[in-house]
Length: 255
Ligand code: SF4
Image 1 (cartoon, rainbow, N blue to C red):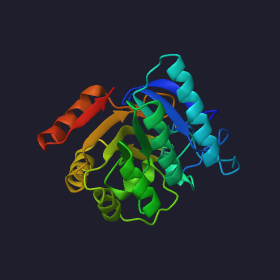
Image 2: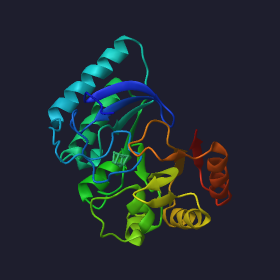
Image 3: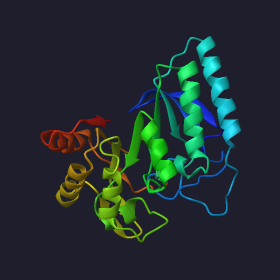
Image 4: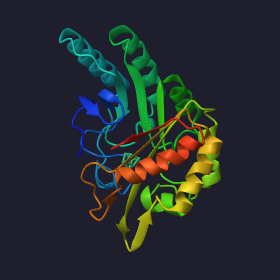
């Protein structure tokens, strides 16, 4: 499923409440530095390029939508950067965040600004600085084991060290929320499961280094491009959350 406009919603989000979405990617193609097996936008398709919206177009579309919602007396909890891929890949991401802060303060001062990101571009100083300005800097960490990240997230760049990724996440000094999707399944002959004891121990150790202000865990909720994936039962998610809580983390489970 692809979002067919720059602004979408408001939609009821499991994790964020009444959420007005911003899609900084093309409306007819997904662009992402990951190719997660569970991605609701589908798998990457290199034959489709599409056009990304300009900074000006995003600014105008957001202002118009917030003015419309205000007239209709509809309040939103969050303005959320999500959409058809990875929002931080937009070349004007920093400037768009600056515009959004101004527009939010004028037209929806009670709404927070959230970014759902795969965390792959946080070493870019412009992206890092922009993420520090938003209320909810929500960064993906589906596993702390390299092989599992390769199996679940399929990053374009496979030459990475997990220790570096974790150190980069820790560089936010707590100004981040870690989002983790737990899933099981089979893909290309590989058994995938990021809920094993080995996985959870590695993940908890990574969290001890990162010290996020919050953790969000969940499982698949809608149709996924790889049909063999299984939703993790809420009892398992709650058991994982209880281990994180024992370590003092603020963790929420979305079921
Ligand atoms: S990071 Fe997000 S947009 Fe990119 S492939 Fe994964 S789920 Fe899809």
